[in-house]
Amino acid sequence: MQIMIKSQRGNAVKIPYATIERIATYLRCMKHLQAQGVKIISSSELAQNTKTTPEQVRKDLSYFGKFGKTGEGYNVDKLAKKLERILRTKKEWKVCIIGAGSLGGALARYPGFKESGYCIVALFDNNPAKIGKKIGSAEIFDIKNFKEITEKTKIELAMLAVPQSSYEDVKEILENSKINGVINFIPHTLRLKTRRKIPVVNVDLAQKLYILSYLIKNK
Amino acid sequence: MQIMIKSQRGNAVKIPYATIERIATYLRCMKHLQAQGVKIISSSELAQNTKTTPEQVRKDLSYFGKFGKTGEGYNVDKLAKKLERILRTKKEWKVCIIGAGSLGGALARYPGFKESGYCIVALFDNNPAKIGKKIGSAEIFDIKNFKEITEKTKIELAMLAVPQSSYEDVKEILENSKINGVINFIPHTLRLKTRRKIPVVNVDLAQKLYILSYLIKNK
DNA sequence: TCCTGTGAAGCAATTCACAGCT
DNA sequence: AGCTGTGAATTGCTTCACAGGA
Image (cartoon, rainbow over all chains, first blue to last red):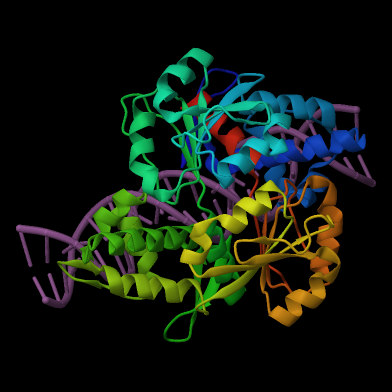
């Protein structure tokens, strides 16, 4: 899977999906380095911290511009800013979580989202006992009001953390909403059939264990 | 990244990593079909359910053998069994979770692991208030006893769900243990430096949001 | 001397196209 | 007629190797 972008000169360029994944990882690494007060980093050091090769780092970055200084490396603060700009248009995205069970609750409490500029502003559930309660600063709303609340609050992203049995219901709710992107933790490959194309990132937790046991068996 | 396996005839074959990921997804799909009572499925139907192409499905499966019937499709029960056998050697793997916070707790309660044959048998934490309590059927133990308990109980897999600040400590504990594989939810690229190679699958939750916002921006 | 940036080469994965079976 | 299995062709990704700048 490749992603088209416009280059600085205006001509279209194809970017490998794997490059985007690594760019996000480089950014995370930059933030750690900033916290440690590191000012300059070379492609080989960055590669070591992200399980890749120096050439790969340089090639990945070169899709988006020239960020380094020859013979020296990359300025950590500057590169962090550039990578942020590559990955998103906004400073803060508003995110909701569908499903206020243990997984939904854990996602709501996960500190990494806020740190990265993704703000969990609401949860949705169909359990009356949960509605009205708060997790952190995010309130739990009735899933019936999903469309209304997300549109009023301008929530663009949703994370799905409901049990498998609610999969079809949630799919329909999303298709009728104005949500712009979805992270799906339900073990089904989600494909929303709407006119406008809504990107979906599927995360299957059990799949990770299958892959792990395969790797152990065949390492 | 490619993975070498021995083919039926004994010669080594390279398998794309992406193929393994898809095989795990096909298996999940097979289980849904079994639950629905579907007996036969074609490569094109399977492809539709897993966001890929029929050719890709057939090619993926062909690395491991011939599982279909010409002109008909695949027997769901039979294929499910075959895929299980491709992905793992054991019926049940014992898994522990390091970190009994909200993420660790959510993973311990996640029903999908047990359904797939991965049994959460223990959690580890350093908070005395939590030690001795239970989540589902899994007890929370003192992280100090990690090596002893995992070896005695024959736990092979670990999932990391501790805060970033405990990253270095946990890394050391794992390196001194007999754990055979790790799923890492800490936002650091984990690379264990031990003599025997321990496979690690890194899952960075915030990274998924970065990717999503990139896809929205460039769709 | 050291490290970036990048065309070109090499390698890997996917898609095509069709033979073959039922 | 319909669907699998698979070499061959194609496309895409990574690695190489080196020019060029500090």
